[in-house]
Image 1: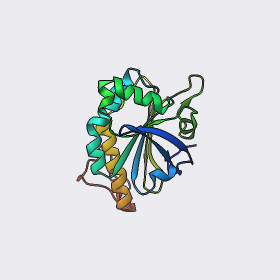
Image 2: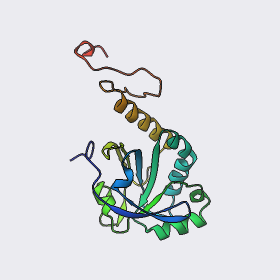
Image 3: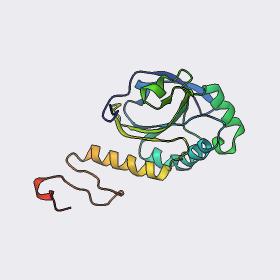
Image 4: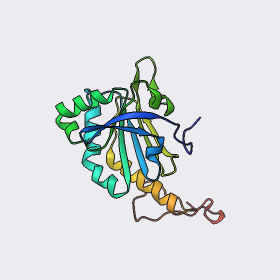
Amino acid sequence: MSLINTQVKPFKATAYHGGKFIDLSEESLKGKWSVFVFYPADFTFVCPTELEDLADNYAEFQKLGVEVYGISTDTHFAHKAWHDTSDAIKKVNYPLIGDPTGLLSRNFQVMIEEEGLALRGTFVINPDGFIKVMEVHDNGIGRDATELLRKVKAAQYVASHPGEVCPAKWTEGAATLTPSLDLVGKI
């Protein structure tokens, strides 16, 4: 069953953010767009490149009113230690959520049970707590923050323009489509 258009299940978690530990829940997401970026583990190889790419683009997400959350099955303590020791992770200014019980990873269907790690899962969540974008990668395939930004912009556009849809490769300001009988067979 797809998670698209389902509500984020209840959770409680601790994140490392801004030099301190903060408590988060599904209620923390309400009222703003959110992006959950699951990754396998701290102190690894592809993960810091992805989190650094998100950090380099974080201001753009913030301009869109979006909070980014990095999530792995490590603890919030491990996130702090990684932040303190990695030049790439020192750039991260968004919350890094610890999911040592795997609850969030299971709720978002990205848990690799036999490894206790998460797949590379990306989820865009609207201000009402509903999942609008979902993408899951094999752990050997890194993600691109600029493509995620494009998807967030498309999700926000569709949310604010009922009846319109964004075609392939849509970018902000480009033409959209209004599905109708007149368009059938003409695209």
